Image (tube, rainbow, N blue to C red; front, side):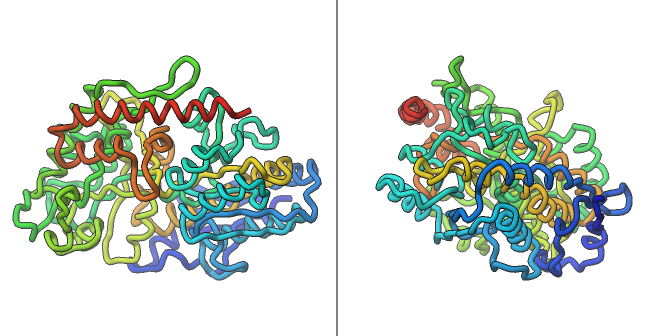
Length: 501
């Protein structure tokens, strides 16, 4: 019989002081000796039925002889590895530890996490190992650009869509992976609950409640109603932001604490990557007119120093010297900006400070847009890849699938339910807003073929981001020149995919 534990999310969120540390959980194990937690509307409880997951993982363990297998999981230091090989009272670390503990206990394996100092080190070590014919690594963790792109380009990872043990239709894997990252119907990357970053790097908008209260024309209720009714658009955001006077001296309050033009591009339902009839990615030669139209709006918002405290990195301007701050979120954190374009994880981070905020989805491009879209930033969002030389692919694939399933039980419960929808929020409405944010997360293959090094996007996205944020006068010519370069990158990617079984 399934046992129950109660996770009093809103009680935690509303009684803790604003400056609460979001990481302490008191060692609460949301999945230990239980198959269900409960969420009854109005009580602040969260319901998840874990019985099916437990049964599924048990069946996986029975399907393959894994006893005594040494499973090596390599990646950069991050929240995807427990801080200690034990419970330490940290929600994220403990959730990852519980997942690791169950994998060891259920499958009878030795878990060998190999933590590197950074993504570039991860990629280099895996490439060197596989190129030399070594089979030291079973599963590789890393972000899209720094790790997965490098491993794919080096031809050292295998397809994951052909592995019978991995069920891409399951909830714990991103359901749009095939449509987003397949190359001629071949998929090499896994994303989902197995990586903590899946809950950290999805775009959203935060609004500063203290700033909003200074202007009687701005209503929290209206903001939430607009979002709830599907009417939260860029135009509506600009209209509400206009109630904050322009700030030419930089000493008062800004309308926007930072700029995120690329995020607005994707939230407007626009795409950079298209796919031909064979499933090969491509981009169009000429800048889409919708991109140009949007850039005129976004540069009007973000390049205006009286609206947004941005800085021109091409001119080597220092935001420290020009604006007397050294972080994007300082204006918002110090109650000097109304809106802040954030990753969902920023909502947890900002609870450390004396700032009260609400959460909104990224705005639609227009009221006729059918749904909201939230772009998953490629810099942190983790991916999993499997090296070609993995010692036992059946065991590796089986444990990878189990890792995904157990991540729904532990990592999703801890991060999404307890931290995001629990400790990060200040009101009930923000819980609903987070559900909207995560209902349609979008990705783009440009993360892979952008061609950047480990520290930046490639020239196409670098220029597009700049042109849509600070100065769109060269956006048409930049797109044309970068499209030519990008096509060579895409051709190389398709050729690499063609050589894979």
